[in-house]
Length: 183
Image (cartoon, rainbow, N blue to C red; front, side, top):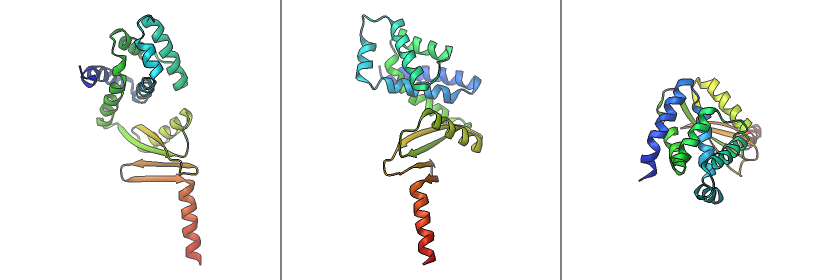
């Protein structure tokens, strides 16, 4: 069966749960982190290994997610991962994450931004950007962080056609333009 078909009821259930307490961002982060874990070949082998109890797999995944997210998982989040493991659906996690994000983006409460930086943003930096954008737009904000080695520092935030350029490169270009006008 195609993973999207398997993933849809799970994504819908998590979306309904997230709607209750507006925990869209927390769930998105858990789902994205879980999807990232499944990219790792060793993790996939570990999950597929039949001699490891599902409870032990859950413990390992829980600890890895705790490390990635820099926080404890909620009871609902642990239960969800456990359900996926028990139903042999953990491999659908990337599809669940994608569908969940689509559901978030269809709500009037959500806005998606692309954030480009010179380096990997820390979770704290991402949270600060999300918090600032949430306050500015008064909507649930999701960010897709991308690294651009050509940037010296700072960030560029894109919202469709709108660009907020807070990069050092933009500041240097602006200074260069000002200097060229004075001569």
